[in-house]
Image 1 (cartoon, rainbow over the protein chains, first blue to last red):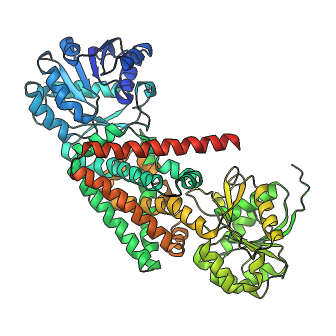
Image 2 (image 1 turned 180 degrees about the vertical axis):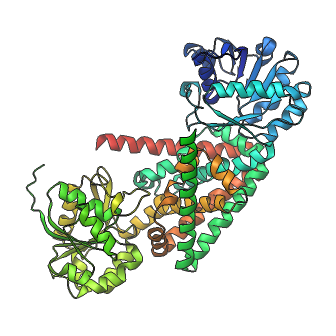
Image 3 (image 1 turned 180 degrees about the horizontal axis):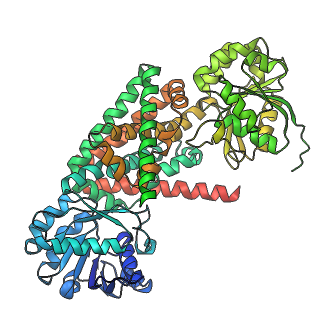
Length: 300
Length: 300
Protein backbone atom coordinates (compact mmCIF):
# COMPACT_ATOMS: atom_id res chain seq x y z
CA UNK A 1 0.00 0.00 0.00
CA UNK A 2 2.62 2.58 -0.99
CA UNK A 3 1.69 5.82 -2.64
CA UNK A 4 3.82 8.45 -4.31
CA UNK A 5 1.60 11.46 -3.52
CA UNK A 6 2.86 13.39 -0.49
CA UNK A 7 1.09 12.62 2.75
CA UNK A 8 -0.84 15.22 4.75
CA UNK A 9 1.34 16.71 7.46
CA UNK A 10 -1.17 17.87 10.03
CA UNK A 11 -4.86 17.10 9.69
CA UNK A 12 -7.13 18.84 12.17
CA UNK A 13 -10.42 17.02 12.61
CA UNK A 14 -13.12 19.16 14.21
CA UNK A 15 -15.78 16.69 15.31
CA UNK A 16 -14.66 13.10 15.97
CA UNK A 17 -17.81 11.13 15.12
CA UNK A 18 -18.71 8.37 12.69
CA UNK A 19 -17.64 10.31 9.58
CA UNK A 20 -14.65 12.21 10.98
CA UNK A 21 -13.39 9.15 12.86
CA UNK A 22 -13.73 6.93 9.79
CA UNK A 23 -11.85 9.44 7.63
CA UNK A 24 -8.95 9.55 10.13
CA UNK A 25 -8.86 5.76 10.32
CA UNK A 26 -8.88 5.40 6.53
CA UNK A 27 -6.04 7.92 6.05
CA UNK A 28 -3.95 6.39 8.82
CA UNK A 29 -4.40 2.91 7.34
CA UNK A 30 -2.97 4.24 4.06
CA UNK A 31 -0.14 6.13 5.79
CA UNK A 32 -1.58 9.20 4.12
CA UNK A 33 -1.35 11.46 7.15
CA UNK A 34 1.44 12.26 9.59
CA UNK A 35 -0.57 13.61 12.46
CA UNK A 36 -4.28 13.85 13.26
CA UNK A 37 -5.35 16.42 15.84
CA UNK A 38 -8.89 15.88 17.05
CA UNK A 39 -11.22 18.54 18.42
CA UNK A 40 -14.37 17.69 20.37
CA UNK A 41 -16.54 19.40 22.94
CA UNK A 42 -16.17 16.58 25.43
CA UNK A 43 -13.00 15.19 26.94
CA UNK A 44 -14.61 11.74 26.96
CA UNK A 45 -14.79 11.69 23.17
CA UNK A 46 -11.18 12.85 22.92
CA UNK A 47 -9.93 10.19 25.31
CA UNK A 48 -11.86 7.47 23.50
CA UNK A 49 -10.55 8.64 20.11
CA UNK A 50 -6.98 8.60 21.44
CA UNK A 51 -7.48 5.15 22.94
CA UNK A 52 -8.90 3.83 19.65
CA UNK A 53 -5.91 5.28 17.79
CA UNK A 54 -8.18 7.44 15.64
CA UNK A 55 -6.30 10.65 16.58
CA UNK A 56 -2.78 11.40 17.79
CA UNK A 57 -3.54 14.46 19.87
CA UNK A 58 -6.67 15.94 21.38
CA UNK A 59 -7.59 19.56 21.85
CA UNK A 60 -10.75 21.18 23.15
CA UNK A 61 -10.12 24.62 21.64
CA UNK A 62 -10.62 24.72 17.85
CA UNK A 63 -8.56 27.90 17.52
CA UNK A 64 -5.54 26.40 19.24
CA UNK A 65 -5.94 23.15 17.31
CA UNK A 66 -5.72 24.71 13.84
CA UNK A 67 -2.59 26.78 14.47
CA UNK A 68 -0.28 24.53 12.42
CA UNK A 69 -2.90 22.80 10.30
CA UNK A 70 -2.29 21.69 6.72
CA UNK A 71 -5.91 20.55 6.30
CA UNK A 72 -8.88 21.29 8.54
CA UNK A 73 -11.88 18.97 8.22
CA UNK A 74 -15.09 20.19 9.86
CA UNK A 75 -17.22 17.18 10.74
CA UNK A 76 -19.72 18.52 13.27
CA UNK A 77 -23.50 19.04 13.00
CA UNK A 78 -24.28 21.85 10.56
CA UNK A 79 -25.67 24.43 12.98
CA UNK A 80 -22.33 24.53 14.82
CA UNK A 81 -20.50 25.82 11.73
CA UNK A 82 -20.78 29.60 12.35
CA UNK A 83 -19.37 29.25 15.88
CA UNK A 84 -16.57 26.95 14.75
CA UNK A 85 -15.62 29.13 11.80
CA UNK A 86 -15.48 32.19 14.07
CA UNK A 87 -13.34 30.26 16.54
CA UNK A 88 -10.74 29.22 13.96
CA UNK A 89 -10.73 32.40 11.78
CA UNK A 90 -7.92 34.20 13.60
CA UNK A 91 -5.75 31.11 14.14
CA UNK A 92 -5.83 29.39 10.75
CA UNK A 93 -2.52 29.47 8.79
CA UNK A 94 -3.05 31.36 5.55
CA UNK A 95 -2.13 28.36 3.37
CA UNK A 96 -4.28 25.81 5.22
CA UNK A 97 -7.01 24.09 3.22
CA UNK A 98 -10.42 23.83 4.85
CA UNK A 99 -13.06 21.28 3.95
CA UNK A 100 -16.17 19.79 5.54
CA UNK A 101 -18.34 16.66 5.38
CA UNK A 102 -21.76 18.29 5.85
CA UNK A 103 -24.84 16.80 4.18
CA UNK A 104 -25.96 20.27 3.02
CA UNK A 105 -23.64 22.39 0.90
CA UNK A 106 -25.21 25.79 0.14
CA UNK A 107 -25.60 26.60 3.83
CA UNK A 108 -21.95 25.71 4.49
CA UNK A 109 -20.76 27.74 1.51
CA UNK A 110 -22.66 30.81 2.78
CA UNK A 111 -21.33 30.30 6.30
CA UNK A 112 -17.71 30.13 5.13
CA UNK A 113 -18.18 33.16 2.87
CA UNK A 114 -19.41 35.09 5.88
CA UNK A 115 -17.32 33.77 8.76
CA UNK A 116 -14.08 32.81 7.01
CA UNK A 117 -13.90 35.16 3.99
CA UNK A 118 -10.11 35.20 3.82
CA UNK A 119 -10.06 31.43 3.35
CA UNK A 120 -12.96 31.20 0.95
CA UNK A 121 -10.77 30.24 -2.05
CA UNK A 122 -9.05 27.54 -0.03
CA UNK A 123 -12.31 26.08 1.20
CA UNK A 124 -13.55 22.92 -0.58
CA UNK A 125 -17.13 21.99 0.32
CA UNK A 126 -17.43 18.20 0.53
CA UNK A 127 -19.95 15.50 1.32
CA UNK A 128 -19.16 11.78 1.57
CA UNK A 129 -22.41 9.93 0.77
CA UNK A 130 -21.77 7.23 3.31
CA UNK A 131 -22.86 6.47 6.82
CA UNK A 132 -24.78 4.08 8.97
CA UNK A 133 -27.57 4.75 11.45
CA UNK A 134 -24.94 4.53 14.20
CA UNK A 135 -23.06 7.58 15.38
CA UNK A 136 -19.99 8.43 17.46
CA UNK A 137 -16.29 7.59 17.17
CA UNK A 138 -16.83 4.05 18.53
CA UNK A 139 -18.91 3.35 15.39
CA UNK A 140 -16.21 4.59 12.98
CA UNK A 141 -14.30 2.24 10.68
CA UNK A 142 -11.67 2.67 7.97
CA UNK A 143 -13.71 1.03 5.18
CA UNK A 144 -16.76 3.31 5.43
CA UNK A 145 -16.00 5.24 2.23
CA UNK A 146 -14.89 2.40 -0.02
CA UNK A 147 -16.72 2.53 -3.37
CA UNK A 148 -18.93 5.37 -2.07
CA UNK A 149 -19.50 8.69 -3.78
CA UNK A 150 -17.82 11.72 -2.24
CA UNK A 151 -19.30 14.89 -3.72
CA UNK A 152 -17.17 18.05 -3.81
CA UNK A 153 -18.95 21.30 -4.70
CA UNK A 154 -16.12 23.79 -5.41
CA UNK A 155 -16.94 27.35 -6.43
CA UNK A 156 -15.48 29.46 -9.23
CA UNK A 157 -13.26 31.07 -6.55
CA UNK A 158 -11.92 27.75 -5.22
CA UNK A 159 -8.28 27.14 -6.23
CA UNK A 160 -7.48 24.05 -8.29
CA UNK A 161 -4.74 23.11 -5.83
CA UNK A 162 -7.23 23.00 -2.94
CA UNK A 163 -9.67 20.84 -4.91
CA UNK A 164 -6.86 18.45 -5.95
CA UNK A 165 -5.64 18.05 -2.40
CA UNK A 166 -9.08 17.24 -0.99
CA UNK A 167 -9.92 15.04 -3.95
CA UNK A 168 -6.67 13.06 -3.41
CA UNK A 169 -7.45 12.73 0.28
CA UNK A 170 -10.82 11.13 -0.42
CA UNK A 171 -9.50 8.95 -3.23
CA UNK A 172 -7.11 7.41 -0.71
CA UNK A 173 -10.06 6.30 1.43
CA UNK A 174 -11.34 4.23 -1.50
CA UNK A 175 -14.11 6.68 -2.41
CA UNK A 176 -15.23 7.72 -5.87
CA UNK A 177 -14.87 11.54 -5.96
CA UNK A 178 -17.17 13.64 -8.14
CA UNK A 179 -17.88 17.35 -8.37
CA UNK A 180 -21.26 18.99 -8.56
CA UNK A 181 -22.89 22.37 -8.09
CA UNK A 182 -23.71 23.01 -4.42
CA UNK A 183 -27.38 23.91 -4.90
CA UNK A 184 -27.90 20.98 -7.22
CA UNK A 185 -26.33 18.70 -4.60
CA UNK A 186 -28.78 20.02 -2.01
CA UNK A 187 -31.76 19.32 -4.29
CA UNK A 188 -30.57 15.79 -5.08
CA UNK A 189 -29.90 14.96 -1.45
CA UNK A 190 -33.19 16.47 -0.30
CA UNK A 191 -35.04 13.95 -2.46
CA UNK A 192 -32.83 10.87 -2.02
CA UNK A 193 -31.75 11.17 1.61
CA UNK A 194 -33.35 13.99 3.61
CA UNK A 195 -36.91 13.17 2.52
CA UNK A 196 -36.62 9.44 3.41
CA UNK A 197 -35.27 10.37 6.85
CA UNK A 198 -38.15 12.74 7.58
CA UNK A 199 -40.60 10.05 6.42
CA UNK A 200 -38.97 7.36 8.57
CA UNK A 201 -39.07 9.60 11.65
CA UNK A 202 -42.76 10.38 10.97
CA UNK A 203 -43.63 6.71 10.52
CA UNK A 204 -41.98 5.66 13.76
CA UNK A 205 -43.73 8.50 15.61
CA UNK A 206 -47.00 7.31 14.13
CA UNK A 207 -46.54 3.90 15.79
CA UNK A 208 -45.03 5.31 18.97
CA UNK A 209 -48.09 7.48 19.63
CA UNK A 210 -50.60 4.71 18.79
CA UNK A 211 -52.72 3.43 21.70
CA UNK A 212 -51.65 -0.14 20.79
CA UNK A 213 -47.99 0.87 20.65
CA UNK A 214 -46.52 -2.28 22.28
CA UNK A 215 -48.46 -4.66 20.04
CA UNK A 216 -47.49 -2.66 16.98
CA UNK A 217 -43.79 -2.78 17.75
CA UNK A 218 -44.08 -6.51 18.47
CA UNK A 219 -45.92 -7.37 15.25
CA UNK A 220 -43.92 -5.07 13.03
CA UNK A 221 -42.17 -7.49 10.69
CA UNK A 222 -38.49 -7.32 9.79
CA UNK A 223 -39.48 -5.12 6.84
CA UNK A 224 -40.66 -2.41 9.21
CA UNK A 225 -37.35 -2.32 11.06
CA UNK A 226 -35.39 -2.23 7.78
CA UNK A 227 -37.68 0.49 6.55
CA UNK A 228 -37.19 2.65 9.63
CA UNK A 229 -33.50 1.88 10.25
CA UNK A 230 -32.64 5.47 9.30
CA UNK A 231 -34.94 6.77 12.08
CA UNK A 232 -32.27 5.56 14.51
CA UNK A 233 -29.85 8.15 13.09
CA UNK A 234 -28.49 10.99 15.21
CA UNK A 235 -31.34 13.46 15.95
CA UNK A 236 -29.07 16.51 16.22
CA UNK A 237 -27.44 15.82 12.87
CA UNK A 238 -30.83 15.39 11.20
CA UNK A 239 -32.39 18.40 12.86
CA UNK A 240 -29.49 20.48 11.51
CA UNK A 241 -29.85 19.03 8.00
CA UNK A 242 -33.55 19.89 7.98
CA UNK A 243 -32.95 23.41 9.25
CA UNK A 244 -30.11 24.20 6.83
CA UNK A 245 -31.72 22.69 3.71
CA UNK A 246 -35.25 23.89 4.45
CA UNK A 247 -36.49 24.93 1.01
CA UNK A 248 -35.33 21.85 -0.94
CA UNK A 249 -36.63 19.55 1.81
CA UNK A 250 -39.99 21.33 2.04
CA UNK A 251 -40.23 21.09 -1.76
CA UNK A 252 -39.48 17.36 -1.69
CA UNK A 253 -42.08 16.91 1.07
CA UNK A 254 -44.70 18.69 -1.04
CA UNK A 255 -43.91 16.36 -3.95
CA UNK A 256 -44.11 13.33 -1.67
CA UNK A 257 -47.42 14.42 -0.20
CA UNK A 258 -48.88 14.87 -3.64
CA UNK A 259 -47.85 11.28 -4.56
CA UNK A 260 -49.24 10.02 -1.27
CA UNK A 261 -52.50 11.88 -1.85
CA UNK A 262 -52.81 10.41 -5.33
CA UNK A 263 -52.60 6.91 -3.82
CA UNK A 264 -55.04 7.84 -1.05
CA UNK A 265 -57.42 9.16 -3.72
CA UNK A 266 -57.29 5.91 -5.67
CA UNK A 267 -57.99 3.91 -2.48
CA UNK A 268 -60.87 6.21 -1.50
CA UNK A 269 -62.42 6.02 -4.97
CA UNK A 270 -61.76 2.25 -5.10
CA UNK A 271 -60.05 2.74 -8.44
CA UNK A 272 -58.39 -0.69 -8.74
CA UNK A 273 -56.81 -0.04 -12.10
CA UNK A 274 -55.23 3.29 -11.15
CA UNK A 275 -53.85 1.94 -7.87
CA UNK A 276 -52.35 -1.06 -9.65
CA UNK A 277 -50.76 1.28 -12.18
CA UNK A 278 -49.25 3.44 -9.41
CA UNK A 279 -47.73 0.45 -7.62
CA UNK A 280 -46.52 -1.27 -10.80
CA UNK A 281 -44.78 1.92 -12.00
CA UNK A 282 -43.08 2.34 -8.61
CA UNK A 283 -41.85 -1.26 -8.57
CA UNK A 284 -40.57 -0.93 -12.12
CA UNK A 285 -38.74 2.35 -11.33
CA UNK A 286 -37.09 0.97 -8.20
CA UNK A 287 -36.06 -2.29 -9.86
CA UNK A 288 -34.59 -0.34 -12.81
CA UNK A 289 -32.74 2.09 -10.49
CA UNK A 290 -31.31 -0.81 -8.54
CA UNK A 291 -30.14 -2.55 -11.72
CA UNK A 292 -28.22 0.56 -12.82
CA UNK A 293 -26.78 0.88 -9.31
CA UNK A 294 -25.56 -2.75 -9.34
CA UNK A 295 -24.09 -2.37 -12.83
CA UNK A 296 -22.14 0.72 -11.70
CA UNK A 297 -20.94 -1.09 -8.57
CA UNK A 298 -19.63 -4.02 -10.62
CA UNK A 299 -17.91 -1.66 -13.02
CA UNK A 300 -16.13 0.16 -10.17
CA UNK B 1 -37.40 -35.17 12.06
CA UNK B 2 -40.17 -37.63 13.02
CA UNK B 3 -43.47 -36.41 14.32
CA UNK B 4 -46.34 -38.31 15.92
CA UNK B 5 -49.15 -36.01 14.73
CA UNK B 6 -50.89 -37.46 11.68
CA UNK B 7 -49.81 -36.00 8.39
CA UNK B 8 -52.16 -34.14 6.07
CA UNK B 9 -53.52 -36.46 3.42
CA UNK B 10 -54.37 -34.12 0.60
CA UNK B 11 -53.48 -30.43 0.73
CA UNK B 12 -54.94 -28.30 -2.05
CA UNK B 13 -52.98 -25.13 -2.60
CA UNK B 14 -54.87 -22.49 -4.54
CA UNK B 15 -52.22 -20.00 -5.64
CA UNK B 16 -48.64 -21.28 -5.92
CA UNK B 17 -46.63 -18.14 -5.17
CA UNK B 18 -44.03 -17.15 -2.58
CA UNK B 19 -46.23 -17.92 0.44
CA UNK B 20 -48.14 -20.94 -0.89
CA UNK B 21 -45.00 -22.45 -2.42
CA UNK B 22 -42.99 -21.95 0.77
CA UNK B 23 -45.75 -23.58 2.86
CA UNK B 24 -45.79 -26.64 0.59
CA UNK B 25 -41.99 -26.88 0.69
CA UNK B 26 -41.92 -26.58 4.49
CA UNK B 27 -44.58 -29.30 4.97
CA UNK B 28 -42.92 -31.65 2.48
CA UNK B 29 -39.56 -31.20 4.20
CA UNK B 30 -41.18 -32.32 7.47
CA UNK B 31 -43.04 -35.22 5.80
CA UNK B 32 -46.17 -33.56 7.11
CA UNK B 33 -48.21 -33.92 3.95
CA UNK B 34 -48.93 -36.88 1.66
CA UNK B 35 -49.97 -35.03 -1.46
CA UNK B 36 -50.00 -31.40 -2.53
CA UNK B 37 -52.31 -30.44 -5.38
CA UNK B 38 -51.56 -27.02 -6.81
CA UNK B 39 -54.01 -24.72 -8.55
CA UNK B 40 -52.89 -21.75 -10.64
CA UNK B 41 -54.32 -19.72 -13.47
CA UNK B 42 -51.34 -20.37 -15.72
CA UNK B 43 -49.98 -23.71 -16.89
CA UNK B 44 -46.46 -22.23 -16.77
CA UNK B 45 -46.69 -21.74 -12.99
CA UNK B 46 -48.01 -25.29 -12.57
CA UNK B 47 -45.21 -26.83 -14.65
CA UNK B 48 -42.58 -24.84 -12.77
CA UNK B 49 -44.04 -25.84 -9.39
CA UNK B 50 -44.05 -29.54 -10.46
CA UNK B 51 -40.48 -29.26 -11.70
CA UNK B 52 -39.35 -27.63 -8.43
CA UNK B 53 -41.06 -30.42 -6.46
CA UNK B 54 -43.28 -27.92 -4.67
CA UNK B 55 -46.48 -29.74 -5.72
CA UNK B 56 -47.29 -33.33 -6.75
CA UNK B 57 -50.14 -32.62 -9.10
CA UNK B 58 -51.37 -29.57 -10.95
CA UNK B 59 -54.90 -28.57 -11.77
CA UNK B 60 -56.30 -25.46 -13.40
CA UNK B 61 -59.86 -25.86 -12.14
CA UNK B 62 -60.23 -25.08 -8.41
CA UNK B 63 -63.53 -27.00 -8.19
CA UNK B 64 -62.02 -30.19 -9.56
CA UNK B 65 -58.90 -29.75 -7.40
CA UNK B 66 -60.72 -29.65 -4.06
CA UNK B 67 -62.88 -32.74 -4.63
CA UNK B 68 -60.88 -34.97 -2.25
CA UNK B 69 -59.20 -32.24 -0.20
CA UNK B 70 -58.39 -32.61 3.51
CA UNK B 71 -57.14 -29.01 3.73
CA UNK B 72 -57.59 -26.20 1.24
CA UNK B 73 -55.19 -23.27 1.52
CA UNK B 74 -56.14 -20.16 -0.44
CA UNK B 75 -52.99 -18.19 -1.24
CA UNK B 76 -54.04 -15.86 -4.04
CA UNK B 77 -54.42 -12.05 -4.09
CA UNK B 78 -57.37 -11.00 -1.95
CA UNK B 79 -59.71 -9.69 -4.66
CA UNK B 80 -59.79 -13.17 -6.26
CA UNK B 81 -61.39 -14.71 -3.14
CA UNK B 82 -65.09 -14.35 -4.07
CA UNK B 83 -64.56 -16.05 -7.46
CA UNK B 84 -62.45 -18.82 -5.95
CA UNK B 85 -64.89 -19.48 -3.11
CA UNK B 86 -67.77 -19.67 -5.60
CA UNK B 87 -65.76 -22.07 -7.75
CA UNK B 88 -65.02 -24.50 -4.91
CA UNK B 89 -68.33 -24.23 -3.00
CA UNK B 90 -70.12 -27.12 -4.74
CA UNK B 91 -67.07 -29.42 -4.86
CA UNK B 92 -65.63 -29.15 -1.37
CA UNK B 93 -65.97 -32.30 0.81
CA UNK B 94 -68.09 -31.44 3.86
CA UNK B 95 -65.29 -32.31 6.32
CA UNK B 96 -62.52 -30.40 4.52
CA UNK B 97 -60.85 -27.58 6.44
CA UNK B 98 -60.33 -24.30 4.60
CA UNK B 99 -57.74 -21.68 5.50
CA UNK B 100 -56.03 -18.77 3.81
CA UNK B 101 -52.85 -16.68 4.03
CA UNK B 102 -54.28 -13.26 3.20
CA UNK B 103 -52.81 -10.11 4.75
CA UNK B 104 -56.31 -8.78 5.54
CA UNK B 105 -58.69 -10.86 7.66
CA UNK B 106 -62.06 -9.13 8.03
CA UNK B 107 -62.56 -9.00 4.28
CA UNK B 108 -61.78 -12.71 3.95
CA UNK B 109 -64.07 -13.61 6.85
CA UNK B 110 -66.94 -11.69 5.21
CA UNK B 111 -66.24 -13.30 1.84
CA UNK B 112 -66.30 -16.84 3.29
CA UNK B 113 -69.47 -16.11 5.26
CA UNK B 114 -71.11 -15.03 2.05
CA UNK B 115 -69.67 -17.38 -0.56
CA UNK B 116 -68.99 -20.53 1.48
CA UNK B 117 -71.57 -20.39 4.30
CA UNK B 118 -71.76 -24.17 4.77
CA UNK B 119 -68.04 -24.29 5.52
CA UNK B 120 -67.88 -21.23 7.73
CA UNK B 121 -67.24 -23.22 10.93
CA UNK B 122 -64.45 -25.18 9.25
CA UNK B 123 -62.76 -22.05 7.91
CA UNK B 124 -59.71 -20.80 9.83
CA UNK B 125 -58.58 -17.32 8.75
CA UNK B 126 -54.78 -17.17 8.80
CA UNK B 127 -51.92 -14.80 8.06
CA UNK B 128 -48.25 -15.74 8.16
CA UNK B 129 -46.34 -12.50 8.86
CA UNK B 130 -43.48 -13.42 6.59
CA UNK B 131 -42.41 -12.63 3.08
CA UNK B 132 -39.78 -10.98 1.01
CA UNK B 133 -40.13 -8.35 -1.70
CA UNK B 134 -39.82 -11.19 -4.24
CA UNK B 135 -42.85 -13.05 -5.53
CA UNK B 136 -43.66 -16.24 -7.44
CA UNK B 137 -42.99 -19.94 -6.80
CA UNK B 138 -39.34 -19.62 -7.91
CA UNK B 139 -38.80 -17.32 -4.89
CA UNK B 140 -40.34 -19.81 -2.40
CA UNK B 141 -38.25 -21.62 0.22
CA UNK B 142 -38.99 -24.02 3.08
CA UNK B 143 -37.47 -21.82 5.81
CA UNK B 144 -39.62 -18.72 5.17
CA UNK B 145 -41.82 -19.17 8.25
CA UNK B 146 -39.18 -20.20 10.79
CA UNK B 147 -39.50 -18.10 13.96
CA UNK B 148 -42.15 -15.90 12.28
CA UNK B 149 -45.56 -15.09 13.69
CA UNK B 150 -48.53 -16.80 12.04
CA UNK B 151 -51.73 -15.09 13.16
CA UNK B 152 -54.97 -17.10 13.16
CA UNK B 153 -58.21 -15.15 13.65
CA UNK B 154 -60.84 -17.83 14.37
CA UNK B 155 -64.45 -16.82 15.06
CA UNK B 156 -66.83 -18.00 17.77
CA UNK B 157 -68.30 -20.35 15.13
CA UNK B 158 -64.94 -21.91 14.18
CA UNK B 159 -64.55 -25.47 15.50
CA UNK B 160 -61.67 -26.22 17.84
CA UNK B 161 -60.67 -29.17 15.68
CA UNK B 162 -60.23 -26.91 12.64
CA UNK B 163 -58.14 -24.41 14.59
CA UNK B 164 -55.93 -27.21 16.00
CA UNK B 165 -55.32 -28.71 12.61
CA UNK B 166 -54.26 -25.40 11.02
CA UNK B 167 -52.26 -24.42 14.08
CA UNK B 168 -50.39 -27.76 13.93
CA UNK B 169 -49.75 -27.29 10.24
CA UNK B 170 -48.06 -23.92 10.81
CA UNK B 171 -46.17 -25.09 13.87
CA UNK B 172 -44.53 -27.72 11.64
CA UNK B 173 -43.16 -24.98 9.40
CA UNK B 174 -41.27 -23.57 12.39
CA UNK B 175 -43.67 -20.66 12.89
CA UNK B 176 -44.92 -19.21 16.17
CA UNK B 177 -48.75 -19.45 15.99
CA UNK B 178 -50.90 -16.91 17.81
CA UNK B 179 -54.60 -16.07 17.69
CA UNK B 180 -56.11 -12.63 17.51
CA UNK B 181 -59.38 -10.92 16.66
CA UNK B 182 -59.71 -10.36 12.88
CA UNK B 183 -60.48 -6.63 13.03
CA UNK B 184 -57.73 -6.03 15.54
CA UNK B 185 -55.31 -7.87 13.23
CA UNK B 186 -56.33 -5.59 10.37
CA UNK B 187 -55.69 -2.46 12.48
CA UNK B 188 -52.28 -3.70 13.62
CA UNK B 189 -51.20 -4.70 10.12
CA UNK B 190 -52.49 -1.43 8.62
CA UNK B 191 -50.06 0.49 10.84
CA UNK B 192 -47.07 -1.86 10.80
CA UNK B 193 -47.11 -3.20 7.25
CA UNK B 194 -49.70 -1.67 4.92
CA UNK B 195 -48.83 1.94 5.80
CA UNK B 196 -45.07 1.45 5.23
CA UNK B 197 -45.78 -0.14 1.84
CA UNK B 198 -47.97 2.76 0.71
CA UNK B 199 -45.28 5.19 1.89
CA UNK B 200 -42.50 3.31 0.08
CA UNK B 201 -44.49 3.24 -3.16
CA UNK B 202 -45.16 7.00 -2.82
CA UNK B 203 -41.52 7.79 -2.16
CA UNK B 204 -40.28 5.83 -5.17
CA UNK B 205 -42.90 7.54 -7.36
CA UNK B 206 -41.68 10.88 -6.04
CA UNK B 207 -38.18 10.16 -7.39
CA UNK B 208 -39.42 8.45 -10.56
CA UNK B 209 -41.38 11.53 -11.61
CA UNK B 210 -38.60 14.00 -10.76
CA UNK B 211 -37.03 15.82 -13.72
CA UNK B 212 -33.60 14.71 -12.45
CA UNK B 213 -34.74 11.09 -12.10
CA UNK B 214 -31.55 9.40 -13.36
CA UNK B 215 -29.27 11.44 -11.09
CA UNK B 216 -31.53 10.78 -8.13
CA UNK B 217 -31.49 7.02 -8.60
CA UNK B 218 -27.71 7.12 -9.04
CA UNK B 219 -27.06 9.20 -5.92
CA UNK B 220 -29.57 7.45 -3.75
CA UNK B 221 -27.41 5.82 -1.09
CA UNK B 222 -27.79 2.22 0.09
CA UNK B 223 -30.16 3.53 2.76
CA UNK B 224 -32.64 4.61 0.11
CA UNK B 225 -32.72 1.16 -1.49
CA UNK B 226 -33.14 -0.52 1.91
CA UNK B 227 -35.86 1.95 2.73
CA UNK B 228 -37.78 1.29 -0.46
CA UNK B 229 -37.12 -2.47 -0.73
CA UNK B 230 -40.80 -3.13 -0.01
CA UNK B 231 -41.79 -1.00 -3.04
CA UNK B 232 -40.52 -3.90 -5.16
CA UNK B 233 -43.31 -6.11 -3.77
CA UNK B 234 -46.03 -7.53 -6.01
CA UNK B 235 -48.32 -4.65 -7.17
CA UNK B 236 -51.43 -6.83 -7.51
CA UNK B 237 -51.08 -8.22 -4.00
CA UNK B 238 -50.63 -4.73 -2.56
CA UNK B 239 -53.44 -3.20 -4.56
CA UNK B 240 -55.73 -5.92 -3.17
CA UNK B 241 -54.54 -5.33 0.40
CA UNK B 242 -55.25 -1.60 0.09
CA UNK B 243 -58.68 -2.19 -1.40
CA UNK B 244 -59.77 -4.80 1.16
CA UNK B 245 -58.44 -3.00 4.24
CA UNK B 246 -59.42 0.50 3.17
CA UNK B 247 -60.67 2.06 6.39
CA UNK B 248 -57.80 0.94 8.66
CA UNK B 249 -55.25 1.94 6.01
CA UNK B 250 -56.86 5.34 5.39
CA UNK B 251 -56.91 5.85 9.17
CA UNK B 252 -53.22 4.98 9.45
CA UNK B 253 -52.45 7.33 6.55
CA UNK B 254 -54.28 10.18 8.31
CA UNK B 255 -52.21 9.54 11.44
CA UNK B 256 -49.02 9.45 9.40
CA UNK B 257 -49.86 12.68 7.59
CA UNK B 258 -50.49 14.43 10.87
CA UNK B 259 -47.05 13.33 12.14
CA UNK B 260 -45.48 14.42 8.87
CA UNK B 261 -47.24 17.79 9.05
CA UNK B 262 -46.01 18.32 12.61
CA UNK B 263 -42.43 17.87 11.40
CA UNK B 264 -43.05 20.11 8.38
CA UNK B 265 -44.47 22.75 10.75
CA UNK B 266 -41.37 22.64 12.95
CA UNK B 267 -39.12 23.03 9.89
CA UNK B 268 -41.21 25.91 8.53
CA UNK B 269 -41.22 27.71 11.86
CA UNK B 270 -37.50 26.94 12.35
CA UNK B 271 -38.32 25.53 15.77
CA UNK B 272 -35.01 23.77 16.45
CA UNK B 273 -35.95 22.50 19.85
CA UNK B 274 -39.26 20.95 18.77
CA UNK B 275 -37.73 19.26 15.72
CA UNK B 276 -34.95 17.80 17.84
CA UNK B 277 -37.52 16.51 20.30
CA UNK B 278 -39.54 14.85 17.48
CA UNK B 279 -36.48 13.10 16.07
CA UNK B 280 -35.07 12.08 19.46
CA UNK B 281 -38.41 10.56 20.52
CA UNK B 282 -38.64 8.60 17.25
CA UNK B 283 -35.10 7.25 17.60
CA UNK B 284 -35.76 6.28 21.18
CA UNK B 285 -39.03 4.51 20.28
CA UNK B 286 -37.50 2.56 17.41
CA UNK B 287 -34.42 1.54 19.40
CA UNK B 288 -36.64 0.39 22.28
CA UNK B 289 -38.97 -1.56 19.93
CA UNK B 290 -35.99 -3.25 18.34
CA UNK B 291 -34.56 -4.21 21.74
CA UNK B 292 -37.83 -5.91 22.72
CA UNK B 293 -37.92 -7.62 19.32
CA UNK B 294 -34.39 -8.97 19.74
CA UNK B 295 -35.10 -10.13 23.28
CA UNK B 296 -38.17 -12.06 22.07
CA UNK B 297 -36.18 -13.59 19.21
CA UNK B 298 -33.49 -14.82 21.61
CA UNK B 299 -36.11 -16.22 23.95
CA UNK B 300 -37.79 -18.17 21.09
